[in-house]
Amino acid sequence: MSLLKPAEKKGRQFQNPVPTSVGGLSTASKVLPEYFRNRAQVEPPQPLGPFVTDARAYATLPASGLRVTWFGHSSLLVETDGVRVLVDPVWEQRASPFQFMGPKRFFAPTIALEDLPKIDVVLVSHDHYDHLGAETMRRLSRVMPGARWVTSLGVGSVLQGFGVKPERITELNWTETTSVGDLRLTAWPARHFSGRSVFNRFHTLWSSFVLEGPVHRVFYGADSGPWPGFGEIAAQYPGFDLTMLEIGASHPMWADIHLGPDNAALAYEAMGGRGGLLMPIHWGLFNLALHAWDQPIERMIELAAEKGLPLWVPTPGEPTEVVSGQPVRSEWWRRAAGRGPR
Image (cartoon, rainbow, N blue to C red):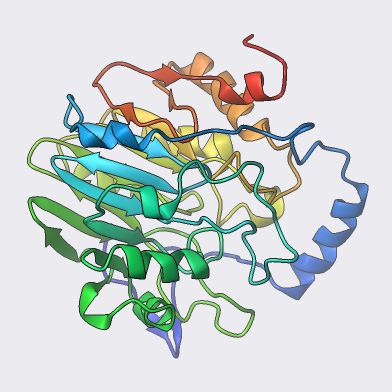
């Protein structure tokens, strides 16, 4: 039986595609002592950047038809087959309900929201603070009034609360598709959870997405723990040019809801050669776990060497062409930390 089906609810709560442990107060009580004992360098030893996006690059369409600008963590601009999609934008100083406390950015935004090119779609995978920034949404709703907003079920009301007009919002359940121009956006299951407080967990949906144009296809894994669905999703398509999988914020105590580097490699392999280039996301910007700030990418590079994975790792803020069969390895974090390439 296929795992790729619309999300189900029990009461007010959406359910994961497979049984999943998210953790509650008991997990928090176990994690807290770990934070006090932790000796990993969870933040860079010196300020990173500045990284700067040259807005003039957007005056020219990508020669390959597919270009991605990674702004750190899971915030991206995907330019594919003539459509611009801004993914999970967070320009806030902190990934937190409060801007005076919580995980702080390692480097400043590489470009002002107001300096971005015209955006056709703002894609929001789920409502967590490191994927949906309140002030970011307010500003975008003003400076990109013509954009379509595509998101998971229930997140539309969150966006409306930040000023996005309801007629501009399309909510998708898993397996549903909407089109913007020639681009099809399909929501697929992911193994995670939602909620902007402890009182509304699971009340909105979380999704991965496929961006499918006439020529190019991109898989955005968003936040997800390991589950058998990666192979099933890939089997729905002839192949992806780029597969984006999360590698950061992982820990054994919440292994069901975040991949980490090792499970990201396994998920990519499960796609059976359809993944194209592999882009690690969800790392390098916020301290959200106990591991060293650069451990996810360093481990990912080890795995890539062992398994022959075609990593695509651009410098933050740099519009970068995606060309089939051409990996990218900027190693920006090593230069930023003063270590240089290995």
